[in-house]
Length: 311
Image (tube, rainbow, N blue to C red; front, side, top):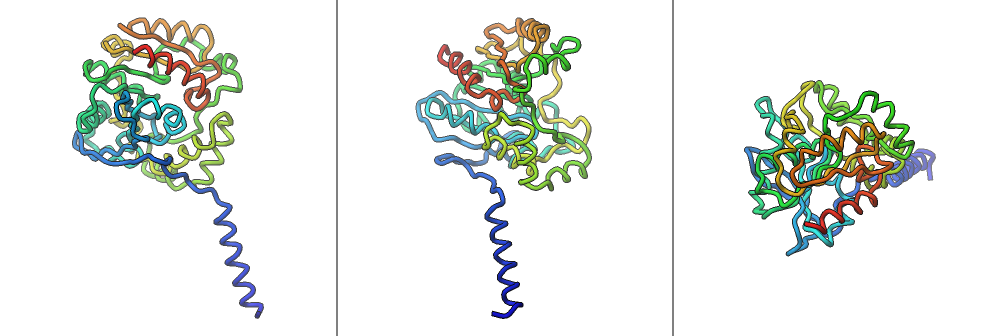
């Protein structure tokens, strides 16, 4: 074999080995499906876990810059007990992006429209972060729509002075926070995030969130590459800015609020804010950061199951 041919073989082998060693984004779990519906003037994409006919329906709304599959590890634990739909919010995953005329209530009407288009009767609404704002506002605006409302670490406007610094002392190093990301900004900033490689994003997530399951970080990395945020510092369509206590007080369905670990003064402030609930309670998850269903999944599941069994 000539040196030229040998060199070509070595180049090809190097390329193949590099491809084999590179991380590969995960697909959907076995038995899951996805699809689209048209509601509120846009095409909405969703994932459906292994169907569970006759079981209670849960509709999940993810946090900002995430997408439906960011719920995967939690859903895998619950899919034998519930019929679960995970919806991509506007501008996230494969749902249509926001436009210049997108209204502040778009996220609410999108998710309510999805539920109606799918003919889902009295689903349990579960939202995280941005999605919790959407779920609570649906519970307030359409009190007969949900069977129950579950809010994972919503903003309650209740942080005590100095809570940011004190929180780390209470939660300790075990409370993982979400990796740094861009939610709104210039087209250049958002596209630069989309152009970050999957391997780079995965490595960042693994380094910054050691408590997360590998699968959580894999879907996190995928979600950042396909996120289509608003090209503004305060774009619309992500849940609105209604006062949380005013909204919570209008929810009549059974409601569970799960909050991240926090020092005593912040816990008391959160609990005081939740007292406006007509039929609900607030629970702090020890050792968990904002992504409590990734940081402390088993603790989160224990509280969720206790609440859901009582419905």
